[in-house]
Length: 274
Image (tube, rainbow, N blue to C red; front, side):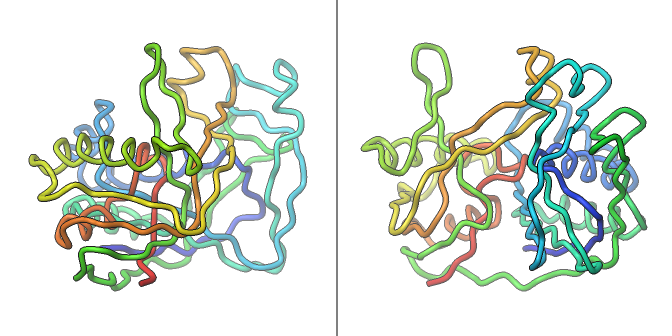
């Protein structure tokens, strides 16, 4: 199940995903604080994913961004020129949310319906060129899912897929041009599937690139900054068109939840296109 949120704002820095998570936390706090605590009181995989799509006619400029009182452009040169999307004409942005957990979706939907606006920025948090940003929420509405009825489907990424494996005690990215890509995806999916659904997939789930590429994106969240002392992390992710195979029921759950790691931070949303 999916739904869409239309909102307006003047600017959106490229490091925005952690603020979408903050929006979710606020919505759940209003309607289902117990669920909020179960999701965000630990680091377990989340049964949802999201993506923001931009309206036509936006431009990308570089602006100073203050993440919080500690991570400022004055202290960190990398924050002096952060890519920022700017919008004209009041065209709305779309936040797409997908999940296999109906309690989460209903609670989130109801919570978002109570919000007229969301403070993307705080007094010291996520200031763009010294200015505070507000998201004006215009509309929240459900969408129809395209059911998966086949054991092989073609999917297109709406938000990039992150695949990682452990090497020397550290997580390293696995890209579409790596011979380990399909195996790493299958192994990661089995682990996440057991955590979220309490069982293994009925048959191995595979993902093979059809027309895909890897790229680097910027991301941030509080635990990373506290652990490393750095303001921004760079992740190597994968996007494009892929062949996804497995049991149709499992594929339905997977495409609703998201593919790969960090789905709850806005990675791995896909659309079934064939």
